[in-house]
Amino acid sequence: MNSENNLDAASTSDSEEEYCKYWINWFLNAKGNEFFCDIDEEYILDRFNLTGLPAEVPHFQQAMELITDELGILLLI
Image (cartoon, rainbow, N blue to C red; front, side, top):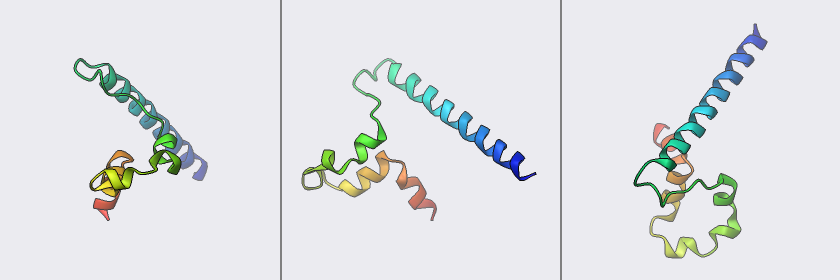
């Protein structure tokens, strides 16, 4: 029974990931969104790439939470 639950969780995760990829591709290709692009999350979270941004970006931490989807998790707690 436990292995069945793991398979269900894995398939749900796979389908959510596929939907996310579909949605991102749809959004990026929609008219008016020519200046948006898909950026790998590892690049966004790399501290080297963030050098100097906290001093330049107002509300930097909230912006990072929004960009990395952590804001929604924090609001639910």
